Image 1: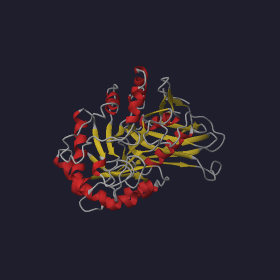
Image 2 (image 1 turned 90 degrees about the vertical axis):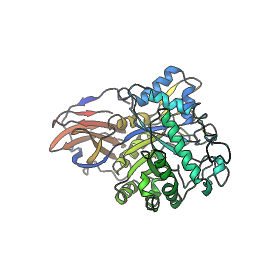
Image 3 (image 1 turned 120 degrees about the vertical axis):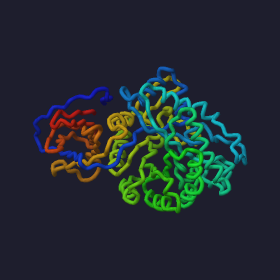
Image 4 (image 1 turned 120 degrees about the horizontal axis):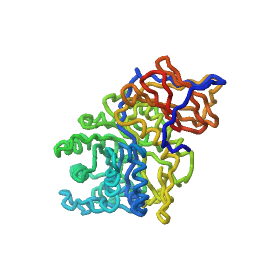
Length: 452
């Protein structure tokens, strides 16, 4: 696997058979890209703290250095605990404390905040942060427990809205670039770990009557508020019902979604079609239990998901845990998963999974502000496959009229590829089971770059 340390020119060469064709259409312009990245969790911070200083620096530089690393620009973290924490905790544990007099970030200061702050300290690092709650404090909920679902009690809606505003304000005071917030992680999932159930109407009512007004009153109206934060399968219904709740739309920036229940990429476009003024972000996905150290399929799965999301109006794409132990944790619910970087805390050994390198094709070359442009992969009968994995692509205008095309080949054979734009062509090769990034310049027919 090429680690992406260099960008090499690919010369046009004679072709023995008609190639696949990738047509780039820069005149067709779609969404503006906000960024790519992953999630800071307490689990990741704990693992990082157990590693030697030089290993910590290597991981952080690998993710956040815009030249030598992946240049992550859009990240996520949790409000209160999530499953990837050592146990349940809240920033306000005192029962009935609606004034939030006991609010504190003592737990975050142990592992989570240092993780974020060290990432910000990487030279050249620049990222926005989305913050998401998995559960209110147990005393605010109908089941008296942060785990197992339950619901927010109506009498605590005002206090919970002010809690969320307080959290954002305290993080910003520390220099943490919180620019986005979600109402609730996976509001239709009664998980054995931190979770809280909301109907679409309840979410809309909370935004319209509590969270939106509180953020505005407390000088946090610039925080982009996202709804749903669950799978693509139900995102159309939820967007219609929540954004459509009286008074909610004015506060809602867009819809966030995950990948855990089927693909349903067309639903992302459907939400855009219904609410073209709103925004769409993929905010969580991972390869679930157990981790597969050294596997190739992880990277292919990530690229397939990203390409199809971006081809359906997604503006930002956030992976789940940045870092986990080789066991896939720690996780207080035993919900162990994979991550792009896995570390053995006993030996200090680090493993970069295929997903790390595949993600880099997007985060390194499709920078914030890039514009999604039209592209299509045309297969002739020689290369057409009877279903199953194939060749997929997406493309962007990166700066001026420069273009970036990312091509995923999940088939077991190499292909010749002819890249066509504005009447000019360039012929390249894409290996079997590979991902390639091609840079197409504004000066017409010039060598096309290959990053694979």
